[in-house]
Length: 195
Image (cartoon, rainbow, N blue to C red; front, side, top):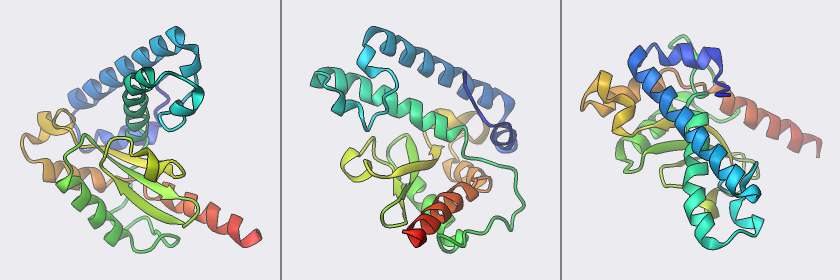
């Protein structure tokens, strides 16, 4: 039901305590249960994501109520699949530029964020990477593919890092699965070169 990659979960244990990971998993289960209830009570919600919800002919008040839940489910799904065990020097990001610069940009965005999640999107048209710390900014991100996410809310790190949010961000980013970005951009590059 949770569909979390084993390597991602193993990587999370290297920068979070087992109790913290268990809390994350329990919260994610509750989110998915709420989503399941919403899908059963409002059939047009079934299979939707937060970006496509408004195009399903639902009343605006339903969209306003359900969109944050769908966004949070998607963000947590991404969070649980954003990490991998890796050596300090890997991986390369040849398709998207310098990995160190990208990691710094993500670190800076997370450090300055006031929201609960930082999400990395790939813009398939421009072959560009966007960092978003705003909650479901649909106008900008509708055409983009979400690839990685980092939970930067206090509950995500407080048990292990206390008030040291920066140390949590640094540790988490050491395990960010940058190959996911490279693969998306490489696929787009190959696709555009054949067109």
